[in-house]
Image 1: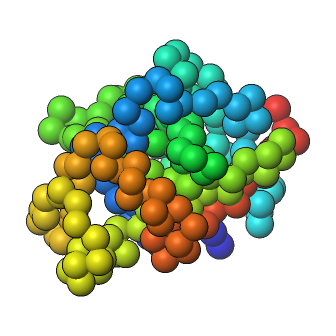
Image 2: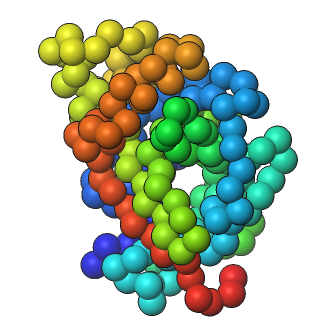
Length: 198
């Protein structure tokens, strides 16, 4: 059974289709002008295919045009908290997500000092009762770099992990070029607004 929160980890936001989102040292937005607010994003969201599941995404407005995203593991004591920014580039919407905290049994334990709070990027389609996300896919990026289809500053780390080191302007060019490519942005998660109150 698919579980909405199971695929979250300290490295960033993992989506249930099994893809690891690309991680970046820099955010997708280069200024506040790239950020947008949308009241539809705020609320409690559940898996469209399993609306009765215990897992839910709680999204609340925060400071500096950001949102707080909290996801609790329905089968364990962990709750992940993220800072998210809604970014509009051209006609496309993206969510820039970074982990800010980890809670266990309702107590914040923070992010380990050695953990790097990187950014992951997600293509977003949003309306009043539906939220769909696709992540910039790590496997796609590795293949595109290996085959020299793209050239963008990055570092290759242990376990075949790639971290983008490009500045925000270069990241924007990358995601805009491949915004509608379902191999580049893959692993769709479809959420619907919960009818239950948090």
